[in-house]
Structure formats: C-alpha cells, structure tokens
Length: 503
Image (cartoon, helix red, strand yellow):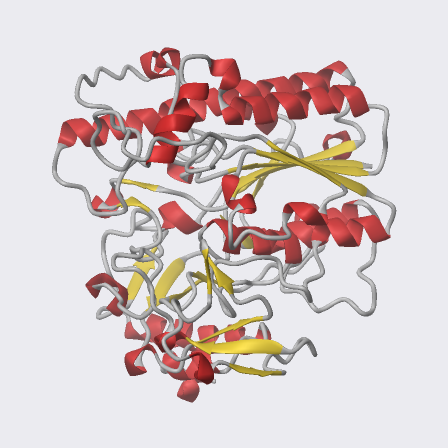
C-alpha cells in the first residue's frame, strides 16, 4: 500500500472547471478526476498556511488554540504515526515557510525531506536590498533577486522542479511498498511568476508595469490590473497542472493505480477580486478561502467517478491515510477531530452535521453544508489566549519585543486533551505589526459583523440573511457552542463569542 498526497497551495475552488462551469479546464486534473472520487463539500479548518498544515498533520483543529506556528512537541503527526506502523514518508516541497521561524518541525517529522529553494523571500541568494524592478503591487528585494534564478526558464521554476523531482522519485521507487509521498508545490501561491506561454494560453494582453504579487488589500478599481492578476493566477494553475501530468505519467508507466492511493487538495483558497478583496486572512471567511477541492483515488479505482456531498474537512486526511495503511492509532496518542473518509465513500459512515473553521482569534465560522454562519467576537474579543509549548509566531518569537508584558505569560496544564505543560499568552499583550492581516487585536469593520448565507441559493455569499433568518442564527449558534465543547476547545471561546448561554 502506497499513498501520494499532492498539496498545492492557495487553490481557489471556483477557478476550477471541475467545480464551477466557468472555471479553468485543467487537463491533468481532469485526468486525475477520472481515477477519483470528487468531494463537493470539503473545507479547511484553520488558515492560512501553517495552521492548515498542522490540521492535516495532526487531525486536530489548530485555530482554536493558536495561530501560525510550528509542530508542537506533544503533537502526534501523520509521518510519526505511519513510521510506528512500518510506513516510510518522504516530502518534497518548495514551500519556504517550512524553513523560516514559525514553520519548525513539519518537514523534520518525515523520514526523508527535500527542499527546493527560491520562493518568496527565501534567502537562497545574497540580495541587493535596494534592488527591485519597476512594478505595482508587492515586491520583496529578496524575491527580486531570487527570480533571476528561474523566471526565464520553466524547468528552473521551484514548483516545476518540486513536482518533476516527485515524478522522478516515483519512477525510482515504484517497486517499493508502504510509503507516503507528500508532494507540495508552493504554486499557485503568490507571487504569480509564470512563463509567457501560459499567459498566452489565458489570453493575457496586459502591457502595464510588472504585477506579480497583490497587496493584501481591497481592489483599487483598476479593472485592467485585476484582470491581469486573475489571468496570472490562472496561468500558474496551468503550469502546475502541466507538471502534475509528469506525476500521473509515472503512475501510468508503472501501473501504480491498483495499489496506490492519491489525494489532491490545497491548504486554503485565495481571493481574486470576489467581494472586492484580494489575497486572504483579513476578510470574512468566504468560500473562496475555506471551501476547498479534494479528489481521492483509492487503490483499484473504487468509487472513481463518484461525487461525495457529505461534509468533510482537511483534518480527515490523517485518519483516512491511517486506515488505508491498516494502522491503528496507538493508545497513548491524543484524540483527534478528524474522521476517516472511507466509511463515507462506501456508504457505511455517518456524515457530520456541522464543521467549524476560521483564523485564530477572529470570527468563528460554522457550516452545515446548506448555510454558513460567521459569528463575530463579542466582549471586545476577550478573553483570548494563545496556547503553545513553543512560543513562536510567523517569523517572530514571543519575546519582549512581541509581548508587552511577559510577566503575564502563564505556564500550566491548560488544555483538557493533553497533560503537556503549555504557555498561555494573553492575546491583548501581543504586539502585531500595523496592517498585519492576521491581527486579532484590531479587527476590521467587516470582522465585527455576523453573516449568514444560504449556499444553495447564494453560493457567492452576496446576501446576508442574519436579520431575516433569526431562527437559523440561533440554531447555528447553538451548534457552534456544542462543536466547541466537542472539540475540547478552550472555554475562553464560549465567553469571547458570547456563547455561554448557548452551551
């Protein structure tokens, strides 16, 4: 039994023809679809990048306890659990966040890992700090230097190398059994660097200054720029799909479909002008970010061509892969929130009624598959604490420069599901940079409102029903309180969300 997980970053589900008739046709994703079951109601639990990966690797919901950060010392991760059952693991990725402060110990859980350099501000070259090309949007001097390594030749692009190396690894190891191959290209994450031939395929005719990297901000009304950045994103999807084809070629060449499971998914989505937002993290938890694609090929082609409508979540991958490899979680392992997808696929499982999702310290969101309800914090978003044994955030430590009064950091046994001692850091003492998109101390106006959407009638989430359907709001609020308790979330959330009376 072998498993392949293809985790592509920042895939907006609505840009895929597989899910939306107006989306982009990707020939190799369609080729994979013919071997797979397609999950129509799959959601990420925590966003953005590292929180989603901790969800996947542990089968637990990250955003209820902390924000961006490393694997915790008490986590039972998928590679560790597989290793205990004799299954080896290999990750190949160009995802730079794994190798900066706040991304520790993800790759190190694997038996073998390989990192391809060059994305974003990866310090793989000595930068000229004052050098950036003429551009609009964002540009980092380090990336301006890095892109000189690859932007002229497709074969040198970090994600292309990542996927092609994975295809080669499969060829070299096709006779092996009992492995997990985790293929993780950074694309189509921004910056949207892509060869011209793919821009030609999406009929891009932009002639303005270089625009690769949108600001994390609302659109500025320039339709030409918005059209260009959307086409750049689509072109990057095409390039990623082109190289996905090399992995599928390896599967075909060595007839691996009969004894290999294949998962295709993403960590979260990305907004491309919907609701006048670009990027992620600072807007309400719209479908473009949290409703994500999932394709699952089972060995031998069981359930290929089927569409699965049950509610599922990224935390379900761990128990599914464990079950495929016929492994039990050891008795000492921590409880998980995820559920194996296999019973849902064969019709023997009970679907979830609700799922929770969100960003740490902001709104908490819930869906039953028909409605999505975004509940804003009450009580000035207090009490809010971050629970961690490794006081690290996105590129920074929780030191005197980040926490205004470190004397208020406590240590103790604060989480009901683990005996491991943790730091409890009061969020109001954490200093985030001005404009930080994940800021939980200074919420933006739209992060202070409640929203209710009927996905059956309004998938685009244009029409807020909070005032028109109070009975649905009450039902979803009660369900949110129950789910928080069921998932052993810190009780602080019930208070800060005004849910004490609903529990």
